[in-house]
Amino acid sequence: MNFKNLNLINPIIRAVTEAGYSRPTEIQCKAVPSILAGRDVVGCAQTGTGKTAAFVMPILQLLKRHTQEHKDIRILILTPTRELAMQLEENIGTYSKYLPLSQFSVYEGIPIGSQLAALRKRVDILVATPGRLLALENQRHLDLSKIELFVLDKADRMLDMGFMNEVKKVLKLLPQKRQNLFFSTSMPGSVRHFAGTILNNPVEVIVSPVSSATKMAEQSVCFVEKEKKEDLQTDTLQKKNIKSLVFARTKHAANKLVRQG
Image (cartoon, rainbow, N blue to C red; front, side, top):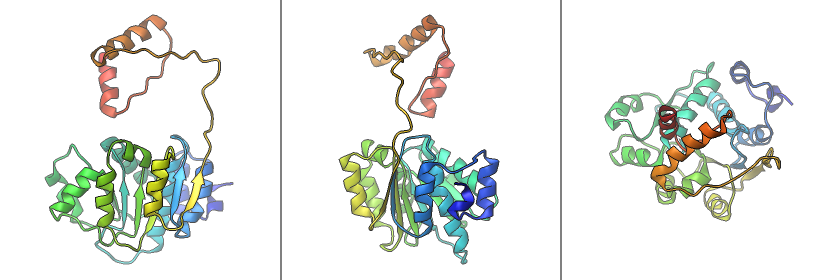
């Protein structure tokens, strides 16, 4: 299986090939054809399986296929955090390298005034966090009534972080007739139920975990007060004297650990 087998156009194939992708992943093989066919899709796969490209590539092609003149936002991708919005923005830029499409991201941490000028221009794809999106809409700085396709990215994290009410408010601002994509890293009952309230006869794409932790790995848990956690981590890594991979929840937390170490 290669990207041509997914009926993707050459500008997209060229961009993803230059980005180092040799062949599509399982979730891309399963999701791309359904999205290109205009179906609602609910996708579930672990981080690192190519979920973002699985919906961004066909979205770009759908936009290229329908190139009518417009001044309205056509695609809305909702994601829970600033870091994820920035990552999406980078990925979309990579995959759309050879397409005349525009994108913009709105999220917390940047003054609203600095984002208004960009929103007055043509925006094909808008990536947003719920809070900033609603703030801009409440101030009548954007119109979501012409959205053709809506993506809820990282749906499980969105619900875990308490954004359920904000997502529902956003949905009320969108037109009834639209394509919906719902992507998540897990599919507990609450997430599946919520997907059922916004998707229309969806294609379900579930990709099993690629691997699990090796049985030879030694695992342990340390219970420590929050203010002492970083000191314990530094002390542990120094004593072990081995190459380590440390995961942080946010870019800010990761930078803080680097400075401390």
